[in-house]
Amino acid sequence: EKTDRTNRFEYLLKQTEVFAHFIQPAAQKTPTSPLKMKPGRPRIKMDEKQNLLSAGDNRHRRTEQEEDEELLNENSKATNICTRFDESPSYIKTGKLRDYQVRGLNWLISLYENGINGILADEMGLGKTLQTIALLGYMKHYRNIPGPHMVLVPKSTLCNWMNEFKRWVPSLHAVCLIGDQEERTAFIRDVLLPGEWDVCVTSYEMLIREKAVFKRFNWRYLVIDEAHRIKNEKSKLSEIVREFKTTNRLLLTGTPLQNNLHELWALLNFLLPDVFNSSEDFDSWFDTNNCLGDQKLVERLHIVLRPFLLRRIKADVEKSLLPKKEIKMYVGLSKMQREWYTKILMKDIDILNSSGKTDKMRLLNILMQLRKCCNHAYLFDGAEPGPPYTTDLHLV
Image (tube, rainbow, N blue to C red; front, side):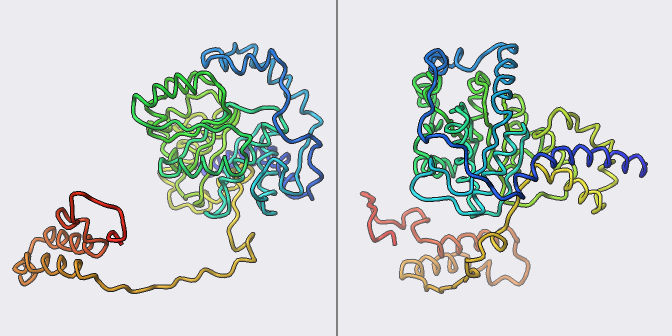
């Protein structure tokens, strides 16, 4: 068994070396001047423009033969084109990319040029959002491919993504699908299906609810923020995104890859579905149940992922940043907080005075109430004066 497993690894590593052969030169060589093209919206022939602006059913739905011909044409045109930036691209507005972000953009471009999907796993705060937006801007301005692209993000970051699109690459028309059933229906009818947009940003929940609509499009780039959300291939979200028609896929994550072999397979399956198409075969190949503690096995699988993954940390790329300082400031309770704190303690004084015979859950409940009081007294019903309820300094 051990010999078989070693042979399988050698096979995978050889496949890995093939991909690395194309990608590494782009990351290691000194970048050359960018492709000489004027910034702005690329010219599109009238018949192509008409196809792009047609309704959702017709805009991106082509026969397999037409899609194959389009890909062959694109590949033939792009054979001698090799774009590398040595500075922030001109289509980036309201600021410039840092050097390591330019290198990250060049790496993403290398993936695209070689038809490879990848994982951008920079540490949080290094600008994965900006690098992704820069890649989509490159697709529009240098490849004449404005879209359609999908960016799948947590609901809490939807507004931030939309603001970043407007700030950095305003020439990209990004739209956001969110809201209740009535709002979504109107948005799909009036905005999504007419197709006059480049990027659709939406949340995981909206994707699941409107999967039938999203499946009608042939997406050029599918970007998934927080890649760990698809590490379980049997989850509803993971199953749906695997059904989409996509030309390229990009995963974003701020956390390093975990040591769970099956979760690594889930990422490999999303990036290379033709190679890693069966979790059962993968589990039997590497006997994952009996290799949970085999660190060398995990490390070698990480090597398989290396050509598709780029991870930098602040200590390596942002050396000008001073070490983080944490300043703890202790703030006393306000008069109202002290009153509520006392009420909670006096109400349950018998429980607090009992000698170890108290129900643990009741004690935990008291602690939760005290925690609420420390956060803000208005978390308790009846504490905030009103109605009318106002938003002024009394909240502070």
